[in-house]
Image (cartoon, rainbow, N blue to C red; front, top):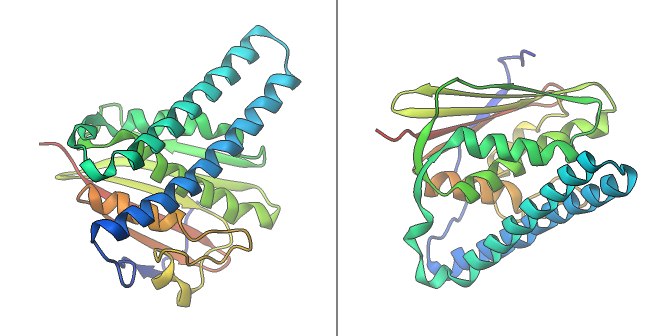
Length: 239
């Protein structure tokens, strides 16, 4: 899939971003609620799959997904409770590909049959210093947004995910052929509480931006109505 290069481009910070701890805690709490909602959706679908398929293999696969999501939710709660201590032990050397692989595996229950995922990744690890849980949550938000952008169109959808090294950066792209974003909304999409969805919270992309920034990276978006959207994240590679 090639998206028209005449699209509008934005690489902007949320307006009025405040780095004081009390405001960060408030945003983190909203983000936790938002991400718990995503996780609960996975739980519901996984439970349905358990009831539908009675084979041992199916049971094991879905129960593993439930266990992984529950662990994810537990860590999110612990992160909020320990926020005042700003625990540095949550940062470690990680392989970005491992986080992406696990997130994509968990997300297969959220992706309808008419949407295909093209995952292009290198054969070598992409090492960086970061928080695997935070990066996985950010990627899950982008993946869910892509699904939501395609779903209303009722057409064959395609989500393209690519990872490559652009030393000293790791470049992660997520592209969809969904409904796209209007030019006058691009500068607002990372603002907390800004949303164009009837059932949206406006927290998901704000959380993505905050996670990328906290890892020393940058995020940009390229989009046009009717042609799709491409998010590009640049994260510093471990030397």
